Length: 210
Ligand code: GLN
Image (tube, rainbow, N blue to C red):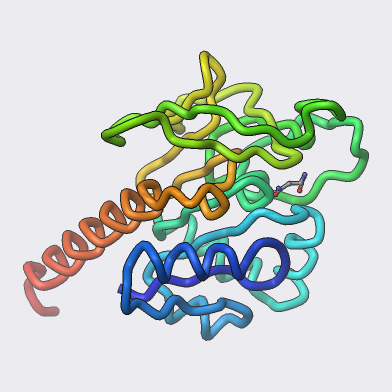
């Protein structure tokens, strides 16, 4: 399975490094152009600045093809700014201009909503299906999930607050697994994505010709 990291802006090297550690011997692709995206079987959307990433996606002519793949249920793990871009709705925050979004995850999100004093913090995240101790969540100018709609499933929490949702193979997190040094989430996502890829391949093989 070829795994890509959207490499237009943000913490791209950290994701590439975490992926190389999570799957030794793998060579993740830095996705900068439509043909890179076409070659990827799964994609990481990094944190950074969502307005900038949205603008660069449009300039690189990646917005339309990424939207099409998201509608097809392409496996994507989106973190922080990347997650903001997948929301169905943004609730205007103090920061002014919000980016356009793909609407792939049924959530309402407000950017930079943890306030100046707590712009960055660490918190123990409880993740459904993840064995072992709480996951160390690194939150940096994180968005807050204000509402989860019926087409998204919550799967990560700090206390009672939802910090991760998914819809099929599309996962969104308000924190940064690539910065925690804990590779369990990367591995969990990749295992789910590759099970999905094998299931799709089996369905294609089983389909009668013509
Ligand atoms: N505050 C950023 C935004 O709104 C996200 C921060 C991050 O990705 N660490 O785009």
